[in-house]
Every structure is written in structure tokens, then in C-alpha cells.
Image 1 (cartoon, helix red, strand yellow):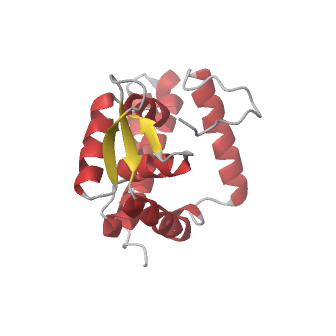
Image 2: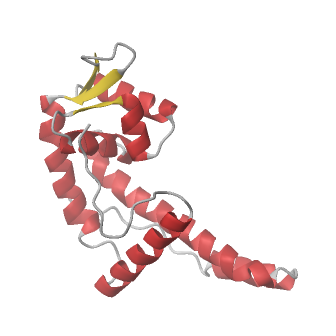
Image 3: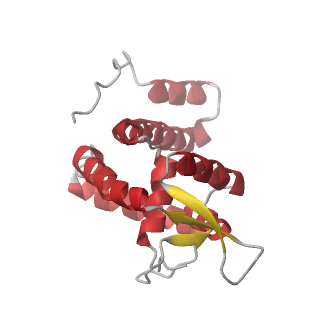
Length: 183
């Protein structure tokens, strides 16, 4: 499936223009930071649009895909809803919404925890398990294998963003340690 056409480009870079205004207004000491943050946010919007367009034919959004993929990585195909939210770094309301929609689509179900009556598990269904590799193949082909960055840029960008996230307290993993996906 081909990627949708990109929107018509603007005549000038609005972030460069914002930087110029920042400097003109005497905020030049923060202009680089404003431009970098704004560029990351705009890039995120562009990439999310690409990902969402690939997932739309599967009836998925990126957040629902992430939850299904996470469940497919677990040994049992299920996780406590709170743990799923923590691993995806989203608010419990977002997990509830994603599970509601995945349940309506027959891709996930809620079930009681076998040993903790206070805990609700979210589990991937056989249909969800079947859908994950199809969606992954489409994402890999249409987005992840050609995201619009060269290999050196990808390596540098991943390193820079990982370092930023670690320093911001996003995670406390020591370099080289893996993250397990079991419940």
C-alpha cells in the first residue's frame, strides 16, 4: 500500500521564521531551544500521521497498536491494565479507552486476575494475535524501514533522544540492560 501524498509544503520553514521572531524580540538566548523543541514536536506529528495512515486499514490507531504489540510480546498474552499503562507510559484513562476499542473490535478482552481480585487483566485475542504481524509488516515496509532519515542520522537521533529521555527521568535503565516483556 503506497504512502498517502504529503501535504503541500509551505513556502518557508515556519520554525525558522519563529526563531527569527524570537531573536528579534530579544529572546535569542532561548531561540535554539525553542527551534529544537518545536522541530521535534512537528517531526513527531509528521511521523504519527504516517504511522496512523498505515494502521487505519487495520482499524487501529498507534496507541491501540502499541497495546496489542505489548500484549503479543508477553508470555501469556495478558497484563494487568495498570502495568500495561506503565509500560506504555500513558494515563490509566488512555489504557481504558484503548482496551474498550480493542474489545469492541474483538482484538482484546478484559478478564479477572487469577490471584488478585482487585486487578483486571487485558488479554490479546486470537484475532488480535493474527493482526499484530500484519500491522507490523505494513509499518516496517511503509514507515520504519524508510522513515526519512539516513542510517547515520537514525543512529545519532536514537542515541540523542535516548540520552535525553534518560536524563529527563523517563526511565532508569543502565546502558546495555534489556527490558523484559513478561507480566
